[in-house]
Image 1 (cartoon, rainbow, N blue to C red):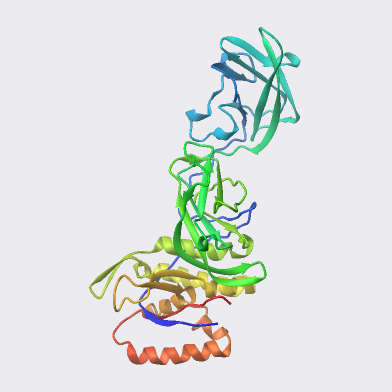
Image 2: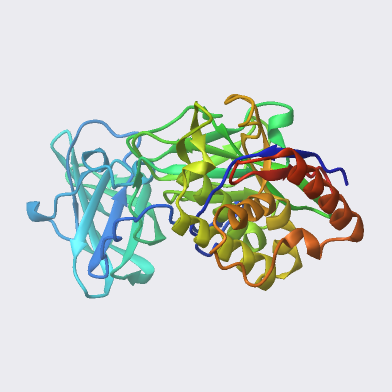
Length: 402
Protein backbone atom coordinates (compact mmCIF):
# COMPACT_ATOMS: atom_id res chain seq x y z
CA UNK A 1 0.00 0.00 0.00
CA UNK A 2 1.38 3.38 -1.00
CA UNK A 3 0.89 6.54 1.02
CA UNK A 4 1.12 10.06 -0.34
CA UNK A 5 1.62 12.69 2.33
CA UNK A 6 0.71 16.27 1.57
CA UNK A 7 -0.05 19.24 3.79
CA UNK A 8 -3.45 20.88 3.53
CA UNK A 9 -5.64 23.26 5.49
CA UNK A 10 -9.14 21.89 5.35
CA UNK A 11 -11.74 20.89 7.91
CA UNK A 12 -15.21 19.45 7.62
CA UNK A 13 -18.23 18.06 9.42
CA UNK A 14 -21.37 16.15 8.62
CA UNK A 15 -24.47 14.36 9.89
CA UNK A 16 -25.31 10.75 9.22
CA UNK A 17 -28.27 8.41 8.98
CA UNK A 18 -28.37 4.65 8.52
CA UNK A 19 -28.63 3.04 5.04
CA UNK A 20 -30.41 -0.06 3.78
CA UNK A 21 -30.09 -2.11 0.59
CA UNK A 22 -32.90 -2.60 -1.95
CA UNK A 23 -33.18 -4.14 -5.42
CA UNK A 24 -30.64 -4.89 -8.16
CA UNK A 25 -28.86 -1.64 -7.52
CA UNK A 26 -28.87 -1.50 -3.75
CA UNK A 27 -30.20 1.60 -2.12
CA UNK A 28 -28.83 3.36 0.95
CA UNK A 29 -31.41 5.56 2.68
CA UNK A 30 -30.13 9.02 3.42
CA UNK A 31 -31.78 12.30 4.33
CA UNK A 32 -29.49 15.21 3.47
CA UNK A 33 -32.34 17.67 3.87
CA UNK A 34 -35.76 17.38 5.44
CA UNK A 35 -38.25 15.62 3.15
CA UNK A 36 -41.98 16.37 3.04
CA UNK A 37 -44.12 13.77 4.76
CA UNK A 38 -45.49 11.08 2.43
CA UNK A 39 -49.19 11.31 1.59
CA UNK A 40 -51.50 9.09 3.61
CA UNK A 41 -53.14 6.62 1.24
CA UNK A 42 -54.51 4.27 3.87
CA UNK A 43 -58.04 5.15 2.68
CA UNK A 44 -57.38 5.17 -1.06
CA UNK A 45 -57.53 2.57 -3.83
CA UNK A 46 -55.70 3.73 -6.95
CA UNK A 47 -56.42 2.18 -10.35
CA UNK A 48 -54.42 2.88 -13.53
CA UNK A 49 -55.86 2.17 -16.99
CA UNK A 50 -53.70 1.59 -20.07
CA UNK A 51 -55.70 2.27 -23.25
CA UNK A 52 -52.79 2.03 -25.68
CA UNK A 53 -54.07 1.44 -29.23
CA UNK A 54 -57.48 3.04 -28.76
CA UNK A 55 -58.76 6.16 -30.49
CA UNK A 56 -60.40 9.21 -28.96
CA UNK A 57 -61.46 8.44 -25.40
CA UNK A 58 -64.42 10.40 -24.08
CA UNK A 59 -64.07 9.23 -20.50
CA UNK A 60 -62.98 6.34 -18.29
CA UNK A 61 -64.94 5.30 -15.20
CA UNK A 62 -63.70 3.14 -12.34
CA UNK A 63 -65.93 1.72 -9.60
CA UNK A 64 -69.28 2.67 -11.10
CA UNK A 65 -70.97 3.82 -14.33
CA UNK A 66 -71.59 7.30 -12.93
CA UNK A 67 -69.66 10.37 -14.10
CA UNK A 68 -68.65 10.98 -10.48
CA UNK A 69 -66.23 8.11 -11.02
CA UNK A 70 -64.48 9.60 -14.03
CA UNK A 71 -60.75 8.87 -14.09
CA UNK A 72 -58.27 11.64 -14.89
CA UNK A 73 -55.30 11.72 -17.21
CA UNK A 74 -52.10 10.66 -15.50
CA UNK A 75 -50.47 13.67 -17.13
CA UNK A 76 -52.78 15.93 -15.07
CA UNK A 77 -50.70 15.55 -11.92
CA UNK A 78 -46.96 14.99 -11.60
CA UNK A 79 -47.50 12.47 -8.80
CA UNK A 80 -49.02 9.87 -11.13
CA UNK A 81 -46.99 7.11 -12.79
CA UNK A 82 -47.62 7.65 -16.50
CA UNK A 83 -45.88 4.41 -17.41
CA UNK A 84 -48.81 2.46 -15.91
CA UNK A 85 -51.42 4.01 -18.17
CA UNK A 86 -52.99 7.16 -19.54
CA UNK A 87 -55.80 7.27 -16.97
CA UNK A 88 -55.98 6.92 -13.19
CA UNK A 89 -58.67 7.00 -10.54
CA UNK A 90 -58.25 7.40 -6.78
CA UNK A 91 -61.19 5.85 -4.97
CA UNK A 92 -61.56 7.29 -1.47
CA UNK A 93 -62.49 4.35 0.71
CA UNK A 94 -61.30 2.42 3.73
CA UNK A 95 -63.18 -0.71 2.64
CA UNK A 96 -61.99 -3.83 0.84
CA UNK A 97 -63.64 -4.56 -2.53
CA UNK A 98 -63.81 -7.98 -4.12
CA UNK A 99 -64.46 -6.41 -7.53
CA UNK A 100 -64.23 -3.03 -9.25
CA UNK A 101 -66.35 -1.59 -12.07
CA UNK A 102 -64.50 -0.67 -15.29
CA UNK A 103 -66.08 1.25 -18.19
CA UNK A 104 -65.02 3.74 -20.86
CA UNK A 105 -66.31 5.50 -23.94
CA UNK A 106 -64.45 5.64 -27.28
CA UNK A 107 -65.86 7.78 -30.10
CA UNK A 108 -69.14 7.98 -28.12
CA UNK A 109 -69.41 4.18 -27.96
CA UNK A 110 -69.81 2.59 -24.53
CA UNK A 111 -67.38 -0.15 -23.55
CA UNK A 112 -67.58 -2.30 -20.43
CA UNK A 113 -65.85 -5.32 -18.95
CA UNK A 114 -67.39 -8.50 -20.37
CA UNK A 115 -68.42 -10.14 -17.09
CA UNK A 116 -70.73 -9.33 -14.18
CA UNK A 117 -72.17 -6.16 -15.75
CA UNK A 118 -68.75 -4.54 -16.02
CA UNK A 119 -67.25 -5.57 -12.70
CA UNK A 120 -63.63 -6.78 -12.68
CA UNK A 121 -62.54 -9.46 -10.24
CA UNK A 122 -58.93 -9.78 -9.14
CA UNK A 123 -57.21 -12.35 -6.92
CA UNK A 124 -57.28 -11.05 -3.37
CA UNK A 125 -59.59 -8.17 -4.26
CA UNK A 126 -58.92 -4.44 -4.05
CA UNK A 127 -57.43 -3.10 -0.81
CA UNK A 128 -57.03 0.46 0.47
CA UNK A 129 -53.44 1.67 0.33
CA UNK A 130 -52.65 -0.24 -2.88
CA UNK A 131 -52.55 0.57 -6.57
CA UNK A 132 -53.75 -1.59 -9.47
CA UNK A 133 -53.48 -1.64 -13.24
CA UNK A 134 -55.86 -2.63 -16.05
CA UNK A 135 -54.03 -3.17 -19.35
CA UNK A 136 -54.00 -5.14 -22.63
CA UNK A 137 -57.68 -4.35 -23.17
CA UNK A 138 -59.10 -6.52 -25.96
CA UNK A 139 -62.47 -6.36 -27.75
CA UNK A 140 -64.54 -9.51 -27.19
CA UNK A 141 -68.06 -8.98 -28.54
CA UNK A 142 -70.99 -6.65 -29.14
CA UNK A 143 -71.40 -3.32 -30.82
CA UNK A 144 -73.10 -1.02 -28.39
CA UNK A 145 -72.07 -1.59 -25.75
CA UNK A 146 -68.83 -3.26 -26.70
CA UNK A 147 -67.53 -5.88 -24.31
CA UNK A 148 -63.85 -6.34 -23.54
CA UNK A 149 -61.46 -8.39 -21.50
CA UNK A 150 -58.24 -7.17 -19.91
CA UNK A 151 -55.28 -8.07 -17.75
CA UNK A 152 -55.36 -6.82 -14.19
CA UNK A 153 -52.47 -6.45 -11.78
CA UNK A 154 -51.87 -5.47 -8.20
CA UNK A 155 -48.82 -3.20 -8.45
CA UNK A 156 -48.13 -2.71 -4.76
CA UNK A 157 -48.51 0.01 -2.17
CA UNK A 158 -49.49 3.39 -3.59
CA UNK A 159 -46.35 5.32 -4.48
CA UNK A 160 -46.30 8.85 -5.87
CA UNK A 161 -43.73 10.02 -8.37
CA UNK A 162 -40.81 12.00 -7.00
CA UNK A 163 -40.31 15.57 -8.22
CA UNK A 164 -36.83 16.89 -9.05
CA UNK A 165 -34.97 14.04 -7.31
CA UNK A 166 -31.21 14.01 -6.86
CA UNK A 167 -29.81 10.49 -7.13
CA UNK A 168 -26.33 9.15 -6.35
CA UNK A 169 -24.72 6.06 -7.84
CA UNK A 170 -21.73 4.08 -6.54
CA UNK A 171 -19.86 2.91 -9.65
CA UNK A 172 -18.70 -0.40 -8.21
CA UNK A 173 -17.67 -1.84 -11.57
CA UNK A 174 -15.88 1.36 -12.69
CA UNK A 175 -18.04 1.94 -15.73
CA UNK A 176 -16.43 5.37 -16.03
CA UNK A 177 -13.10 3.82 -16.99
CA UNK A 178 -14.44 2.76 -20.38
CA UNK A 179 -17.25 5.22 -21.01
CA UNK A 180 -20.01 7.29 -19.45
CA UNK A 181 -22.20 6.60 -16.45
CA UNK A 182 -25.85 7.34 -17.30
CA UNK A 183 -29.14 7.57 -15.46
CA UNK A 184 -32.24 6.71 -17.49
CA UNK A 185 -35.62 7.87 -16.11
CA UNK A 186 -39.29 7.82 -17.07
CA UNK A 187 -42.90 7.59 -15.87
CA UNK A 188 -43.56 11.23 -14.97
CA UNK A 189 -43.25 14.71 -16.41
CA UNK A 190 -39.56 14.02 -17.05
CA UNK A 191 -38.26 11.23 -19.24
CA UNK A 192 -35.03 10.39 -21.04
CA UNK A 193 -34.15 8.45 -24.15
CA UNK A 194 -31.99 5.42 -23.40
CA UNK A 195 -29.22 5.37 -22.24
CA UNK A 196 -30.28 8.56 -20.46
CA UNK A 197 -28.41 11.57 -19.10
CA UNK A 198 -24.72 11.59 -18.21
CA UNK A 199 -24.11 11.67 -14.47
CA UNK A 200 -21.47 13.91 -12.86
CA UNK A 201 -18.52 12.70 -10.80
CA UNK A 202 -19.06 14.04 -7.28
CA UNK A 203 -15.40 13.75 -6.30
CA UNK A 204 -16.41 11.35 -3.53
CA UNK A 205 -14.27 8.22 -3.29
CA UNK A 206 -15.40 5.22 -1.26
CA UNK A 207 -13.29 2.23 -0.23
CA UNK A 208 -15.19 -1.04 -0.43
CA UNK A 209 -15.18 -4.63 -1.56
CA UNK A 210 -16.34 -5.43 -5.08
CA UNK A 211 -16.51 -9.19 -5.24
CA UNK A 212 -13.51 -10.62 -3.41
CA UNK A 213 -11.29 -7.55 -3.81
CA UNK A 214 -11.24 -4.37 -1.73
CA UNK A 215 -10.67 -1.19 -3.70
CA UNK A 216 -9.96 2.42 -2.80
CA UNK A 217 -11.18 5.25 -4.98
CA UNK A 218 -14.53 3.82 -6.09
CA UNK A 219 -16.38 6.80 -7.56
CA UNK A 220 -19.79 8.15 -6.59
CA UNK A 221 -21.82 9.87 -9.32
CA UNK A 222 -24.73 12.31 -9.07
CA UNK A 223 -27.59 13.65 -11.17
CA UNK A 224 -30.57 15.94 -10.44
CA UNK A 225 -33.65 15.25 -12.57
CA UNK A 226 -35.84 18.20 -13.58
CA UNK A 227 -39.44 17.07 -13.25
CA UNK A 228 -41.22 14.08 -11.77
CA UNK A 229 -40.22 10.46 -12.41
CA UNK A 230 -41.51 7.02 -11.51
CA UNK A 231 -38.41 4.93 -12.29
CA UNK A 232 -34.67 5.29 -12.71
CA UNK A 233 -32.10 2.91 -14.15
CA UNK A 234 -28.31 3.28 -14.11
CA UNK A 235 -26.23 2.05 -17.05
CA UNK A 236 -23.16 2.56 -19.24
CA UNK A 237 -25.03 1.88 -22.51
CA UNK A 238 -24.06 -1.77 -22.15
CA UNK A 239 -24.55 -3.06 -18.61
CA UNK A 240 -27.45 -1.77 -16.52
CA UNK A 241 -29.19 -2.04 -13.18
CA UNK A 242 -32.81 -3.00 -12.70
CA UNK A 243 -35.66 -0.49 -12.73
CA UNK A 244 -35.73 1.38 -9.42
CA UNK A 245 -38.22 3.66 -7.73
CA UNK A 246 -36.34 6.88 -6.98
CA UNK A 247 -36.21 8.58 -3.62
CA UNK A 248 -34.72 12.03 -3.35
CA UNK A 249 -31.11 12.17 -2.09
CA UNK A 250 -30.57 8.43 -2.11
CA UNK A 251 -27.33 6.55 -2.77
CA UNK A 252 -27.68 3.53 -5.07
CA UNK A 253 -25.02 0.78 -5.09
CA UNK A 254 -24.05 -1.53 -7.95
CA UNK A 255 -21.28 -4.05 -7.43
CA UNK A 256 -20.86 -3.25 -3.74
CA UNK A 257 -23.03 -3.81 -0.67
CA UNK A 258 -25.29 -0.97 0.44
CA UNK A 259 -26.00 -2.91 3.64
CA UNK A 260 -22.32 -2.67 4.54
CA UNK A 261 -21.16 0.57 2.95
CA UNK A 262 -24.32 2.71 2.89
CA UNK A 263 -23.36 4.44 6.14
CA UNK A 264 -19.96 5.44 4.71
CA UNK A 265 -21.50 6.68 1.46
CA UNK A 266 -23.93 8.76 3.51
CA UNK A 267 -21.00 10.11 5.50
CA UNK A 268 -19.27 11.24 2.29
CA UNK A 269 -22.34 12.72 0.63
CA UNK A 270 -23.55 14.64 3.66
CA UNK A 271 -20.06 15.93 4.35
CA UNK A 272 -19.79 17.30 0.84
CA UNK A 273 -23.16 19.01 1.20
CA UNK A 274 -21.73 20.87 4.23
CA UNK A 275 -18.86 22.35 2.23
CA UNK A 276 -18.86 25.97 1.07
CA UNK A 277 -16.84 29.10 0.43
CA UNK A 278 -13.78 29.85 2.57
CA UNK A 279 -11.02 32.48 2.39
CA UNK A 280 -7.48 31.66 3.43
CA UNK A 281 -4.20 33.42 2.71
CA UNK A 282 -5.95 35.98 0.52
CA UNK A 283 -7.40 33.24 -1.70
CA UNK A 284 -11.04 32.15 -1.92
CA UNK A 285 -11.83 28.44 -2.00
CA UNK A 286 -15.32 28.05 -3.45
CA UNK A 287 -16.15 24.59 -2.13
CA UNK A 288 -13.98 23.99 0.90
CA UNK A 289 -14.32 21.83 3.99
CA UNK A 290 -12.90 24.78 5.94
CA UNK A 291 -16.36 26.33 5.59
CA UNK A 292 -17.69 24.17 8.42
CA UNK A 293 -18.26 25.21 12.01
CA UNK A 294 -16.97 23.77 15.27
CA UNK A 295 -20.30 22.13 16.05
CA UNK A 296 -20.29 20.48 12.64
CA UNK A 297 -16.73 19.36 13.26
CA UNK A 298 -17.82 17.76 16.52
CA UNK A 299 -20.53 15.83 14.66
CA UNK A 300 -17.98 14.69 12.10
CA UNK A 301 -15.53 13.41 14.71
CA UNK A 302 -18.25 11.63 16.68
CA UNK A 303 -19.67 10.03 13.55
CA UNK A 304 -16.26 8.96 12.28
CA UNK A 305 -15.37 7.39 15.64
CA UNK A 306 -18.69 5.58 15.77
CA UNK A 307 -18.24 4.09 12.29
CA UNK A 308 -14.62 3.25 12.94
CA UNK A 309 -15.40 1.48 16.22
CA UNK A 310 -18.90 0.04 16.20
CA UNK A 311 -19.74 -1.09 12.65
CA UNK A 312 -17.32 -3.96 12.07
CA UNK A 313 -14.10 -4.40 10.12
CA UNK A 314 -15.67 -3.72 6.71
CA UNK A 315 -16.97 -0.29 7.67
CA UNK A 316 -13.80 0.46 9.68
CA UNK A 317 -11.60 -0.16 6.64
CA UNK A 318 -13.97 1.78 4.41
CA UNK A 319 -14.26 4.90 6.55
CA UNK A 320 -10.50 5.04 7.09
CA UNK A 321 -9.81 4.65 3.37
CA UNK A 322 -12.56 6.80 1.83
CA UNK A 323 -11.87 10.34 0.65
CA UNK A 324 -13.16 13.57 -0.85
CA UNK A 325 -11.48 15.22 -3.82
CA UNK A 326 -10.89 18.79 -2.71
CA UNK A 327 -8.15 21.41 -2.28
CA UNK A 328 -4.89 19.90 -1.10
CA UNK A 329 -2.43 22.81 -1.46
CA UNK A 330 -4.12 25.85 0.14
CA UNK A 331 -0.77 27.27 1.18
CA UNK A 332 0.14 27.48 -2.53
CA UNK A 333 -2.97 27.91 -4.68
CA UNK A 334 -6.75 27.52 -4.80
CA UNK A 335 -6.98 25.28 -7.86
CA UNK A 336 -5.01 22.14 -7.07
CA UNK A 337 -7.03 19.23 -5.71
CA UNK A 338 -6.43 15.70 -4.48
CA UNK A 339 -7.96 12.88 -2.45
CA UNK A 340 -8.34 13.96 1.18
CA UNK A 341 -8.89 10.96 3.46
CA UNK A 342 -11.63 11.13 6.08
CA UNK A 343 -9.14 9.84 8.66
CA UNK A 344 -6.80 12.77 8.02
CA UNK A 345 -9.68 15.22 8.13
CA UNK A 346 -10.52 13.88 11.57
CA UNK A 347 -6.95 14.51 12.70
CA UNK A 348 -7.11 18.08 11.43
CA UNK A 349 -10.36 18.76 13.27
CA UNK A 350 -8.84 17.73 16.57
CA UNK A 351 -5.94 20.12 15.98
CA UNK A 352 -8.14 22.99 14.86
CA UNK A 353 -10.67 22.54 17.67
CA UNK A 354 -8.80 21.12 20.71
CA UNK A 355 -11.97 21.04 22.79
CA UNK A 356 -13.61 18.45 20.54
CA UNK A 357 -14.46 15.09 22.05
CA UNK A 358 -12.53 12.39 20.22
CA UNK A 359 -13.47 9.25 22.13
CA UNK A 360 -10.11 9.34 23.90
CA UNK A 361 -8.13 8.69 20.72
CA UNK A 362 -5.49 10.82 19.07
CA UNK A 363 -5.49 9.38 15.58
CA UNK A 364 -7.15 6.32 14.02
CA UNK A 365 -3.95 5.71 12.05
CA UNK A 366 -2.32 4.51 15.28
CA UNK A 367 -4.60 1.50 15.10
CA UNK A 368 -3.02 0.48 11.79
CA UNK A 369 0.06 -1.61 11.11
CA UNK A 370 3.54 -0.69 12.34
CA UNK A 371 4.64 0.64 8.97
CA UNK A 372 1.68 3.02 8.86
CA UNK A 373 2.36 4.26 12.40
CA UNK A 374 6.03 4.87 11.68
CA UNK A 375 5.28 6.63 8.41
CA UNK A 376 2.77 8.90 10.09
CA UNK A 377 5.16 9.70 12.93
CA UNK A 378 7.91 10.71 10.49
CA UNK A 379 5.56 12.95 8.53
CA UNK A 380 4.27 14.51 11.75
CA UNK A 381 7.82 15.51 12.72
CA UNK A 382 8.47 17.00 9.30
CA UNK A 383 5.21 18.93 9.46
CA UNK A 384 5.93 20.30 12.92
CA UNK A 385 9.19 21.72 11.64
CA UNK A 386 7.82 23.13 8.39
CA UNK A 387 4.45 24.59 9.35
CA UNK A 388 4.31 27.70 11.54
CA UNK A 389 1.49 29.98 12.65
CA UNK A 390 -1.15 28.15 10.64
CA UNK A 391 -4.08 26.51 12.38
CA UNK A 392 -5.84 23.50 10.93
CA UNK A 393 -3.08 21.97 8.77
CA UNK A 394 -3.10 18.25 8.34
CA UNK A 395 -1.64 15.52 6.23
CA UNK A 396 -3.25 14.12 3.16
CA UNK A 397 -2.73 10.43 2.75
CA UNK A 398 -3.91 8.85 -0.48
CA UNK A 399 -4.49 5.13 -0.36
CA UNK A 400 -4.62 3.21 -3.54
CA UNK A 401 -5.98 -0.28 -4.14
CA UNK A 402 -5.51 -2.52 -1.15
